[in-house]
Length: 287
Image (cartoon, rainbow, N blue to C red; front, side, top):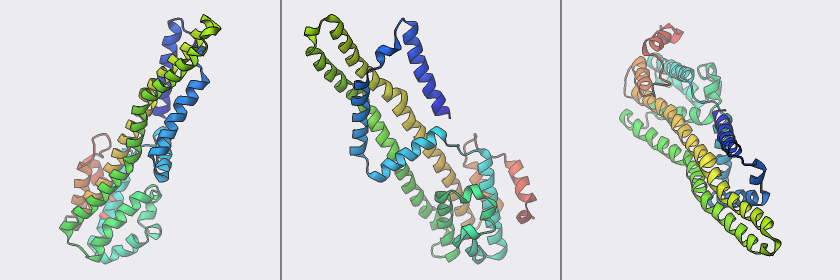
């Protein structure tokens, strides 16, 4: 929602300032320039992007525009869920976690947290981290490296749309110059039509340069940065899972493992320590 509000501010302030200075916004409307600049920019994106990344770019832009961020309440639910899982493992043995980890959709614990269960990537990351703990295939002190490698790969993959959007944003001013040169070429062919026709075509050419810069720095690069911050937020969520699971695997008490994970969070989303501890201890699994 804030992306749309920001876009309205960018457009409104630009057109508003232009009109205050006596400009007519209709003189900026040259369809040919829009076709050249936006069409070339789209073509550049298609050339540079594999099909699956193109789909991811559309998905990320939609999330950046309309998606809901990860709130403090989401982290409270995550830490509560992790605590429940760890308590079952501590009290009944790690083998008791197998029914929950192998089939999370049927798990009585996971079903209490439908928002988490609905997010496939987060569920798989937790499940992939818990399976080696249950199977005993690796030593506890090796689990953190394993999960870190998976997280690093996810971070690399999630940044592909950012890099491509930044590439398009950096290209747009030059694309605007291409549109302007095309406009000047068109102008040279219209000199015989008189000053009025020439002036109109020069204005159209200058609009191309303006549009390239405007779209690049007013929209494409800011959206790319928004997606980058969104990716960092998602990474922090997964890293919270990583820290909690690896701490539990090393033999720390469930409450301690969860507390270490809580302290790894940014202050804007970090639950209060005393309140979280009281909540965990008041849960049936905490008694």
